[in-house]
Length: 454
Image (cartoon, rainbow, N blue to C red; front, side):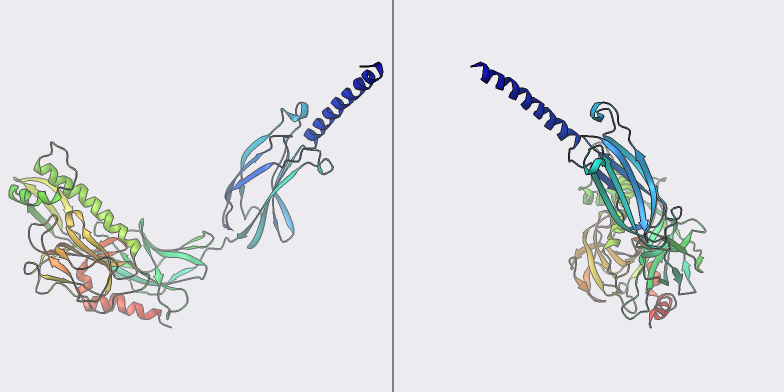
């Protein structure tokens, strides 16, 4: 290579290197990657002080400025602001990731009812945009709603027996999305009173469990679309009731006759007959009652029943609702349970008829209750038919009062052929005898339902 070419090479190569280094430096200083911003949650409504989680990240030039604000009616209010210092060469020691939480309280921020815009802006240390840096922005529209829904009782006289059923008619404001009644921590949902009813009118069947302690906390409850809650008081009177006590002697012969039915249940290899019986009477009973309670979600929002309710024909009451049963074996008390229905005995394999119009929501084996049918009568009301020898109906079938749904038997934990009949209100067992009393229905149910008519 001659001297002239060598000189040109020595001039061009350094220039290329310098230009490359300059391009690399400019690509770092003027990089175009925006910071990553994540805000959670992003609610539709703001009804009370709400906490938000903010995660921001910039892997390249690093974080420069964070600004969180709300805008309503042209007025901007700063909620959170933070500036990040530049540290080290190219800000390598600066902040590249930042996680924090911030709260928005509509009262402290002096926000009015209505729309508000949440805005999160983050800049990095890039020299783009005239030196301001890359900007990432998250905007979210919310509605400030701090006014709770209204709820008031319409029916005035609400007398309920311990272990019995109550019905209340009430009215809610149009923004209500969920409402009902609480008895301590038990919730009983309300349902629209019907297409012909007055605006906002609801009906709610509720129960006062037979084992509840004195003076329960009973109140109406409503929630609106923004999550605001309201409580409403009303006049009610819970009539006390004494329930019978009954001694049941468990014989070895009885155990030998009923235990084979429960071969499906898990027992330990060393369990004797009494241990097996106690597991059935306690543990399996609890499982069955939870299964019954879960059926409350399958109820129809409309009323399906009408008029008087019927019972098993030519049947004698063998056991009552709420009976306190003490179980004895060889003279020693081994267990105690509460009977949650009425036992009716008629002829063997007697026809079991639907107590009122409804829809079959369960027809299968139910542990200690044996073959069982459950009918939904709408708005949380259901009837239960247990210990059947056979079942004539399948789930989702509509039945009319008097339709034969099965035959009596002694499946499950039953000592003889009979029908165990129960009534549930939103999964809570109540006294069925009330529902066989046409005067009780007229005074406590039908008369109140007339209040919903326009």
